[in-house]
Image (cartoon, rainbow, N blue to C red; front, side, top):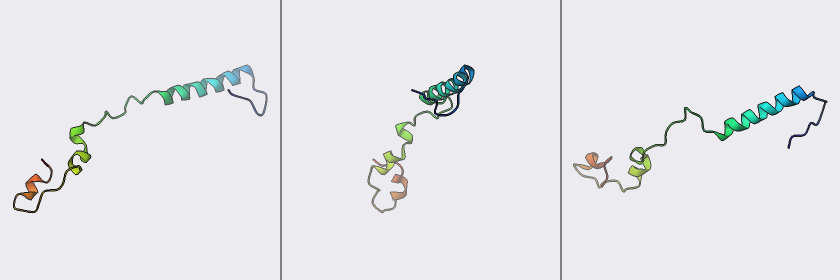
Length: 68
């Protein structure tokens, strides 16, 4: 509910104000068209951090980013 606190707006002014409020509410309800797509789980850094790091050794550097 919208209530006019001060002044005496004309019907045209009130209609214009309500149109702006409704347009802003509709824009906030829809996601932006240029929003980035959801990231794949493959690219998620948490996938790598969820595993223990490899033990030190001559091939440890090769297993750093490919746990498993």
